[in-house]
Structure formats: structure tokens, C-alpha cells
Image (cartoon, rainbow, N blue to C red; front, side, top):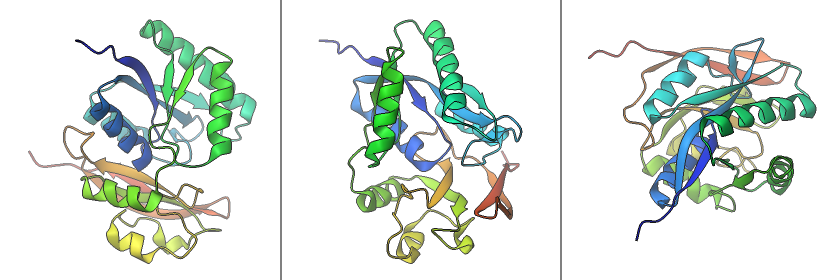
Length: 231
């Protein structure tokens, strides 16, 4: 008997949790991820929070084999700005994929964030899917690394983690070096990542690490650009 798969749009940050969510959903067999949705800060032309360049974002999307929808938000984004941008993006997605009414997120354990998503999307008739929610983040971090995911820290909240961690590879050595109290997956916002390889990609991305700079007196952003990969 053929199992009907639920079409879903995946919130894509360019980081490890979103990437691993895609991998998990593809292995489940009951969900068909049809596209990616990314919030992009209009003034910077970069993925919000992660600060990933759009060129890297689109290379990631190409490597997943999925189209990406960009929801543009202002740098000084309010909840209302975010909700308006998301509502428009989801309306466009629903027109593109009839029957699409499910949005997947890579949330891990923050109940208030998940509840916010559920409440806001329910208002417009959408369901929320969070396949990683409730995971042991220490075990999950090792599962990602052992499963072939490759990523680097592209943003560090220096109020929670030293700026020297910016630009480091997300690997076993990093997990061992994280101070006590810092979540292994950075779920409390301690750090964000830029994914360059993994089972969700058809091929690894060639990325080059650039400079790290402090913004807003708090966040250490490491820039990544696409590298020329020999054929």
C-alpha cells in the first residue's frame, strides 16, 4: 500500500539543525519536503541570525535539490514584521504547492518558541512539524557529526560564549571545548552554524572562511564565501 506523504515547507537557516531536520524528514517516508523558506535581512542581504551570504544560501539549496523562498525582513525586525513576512511567504508557497499546509522547524527544546510558532501558524491554517524536538542535544550533536554533517560556527553570542569560538568547525573537538552550561547544539542562542556538507546534500560545498567581526557589541560573525572547487 502506498503511504500518502504530507507536503511540508522547511524553515531553512543554513545551519545544522535545519539541515539535520531535512535529513530526518527524508528518512521518515511520511513527509515530502517540497521547498525551503529562509528569512533574509533586507539591508544586509544575508540570512537572519546566521549572517550567511545569499550566494552560500542558494548553493546550499541547490545541494538539497530544493527551491528556496526568501522572506525579506528589516534589520530592526519586530514580531509584527516577522509575522507579516512569513504570512506572505506562506501564502506564496500555498499557491505554488496546492495542499501545502505544514511548516517544519529544527526546534530542539525551547517550549515557548515552539508554542509561538504553533499559535501563529494555526491562525492562517498551517500545522507545525518539529521532528527533532525533545532530543538530547549532546547525543544529537554527536549524531550529526557521526552522520557526516559538516558545519562551522558563523555567529557567536559573546555574552554566552567566547568570541574565539567563532569560525571553528562544529566537530567533536568543539563539543569537548564548550564550557559547562553551553548547549552542545547552541539551542539557547550561544552560537549558530553554516553547513557545508552532510547527507542532506548531493555534494559538499566549497566554502572559504573570511574575517570575523563584532556587531552590536555582542555578536561575533564569521563570514563564509563560496570557494572555487576544482573539477
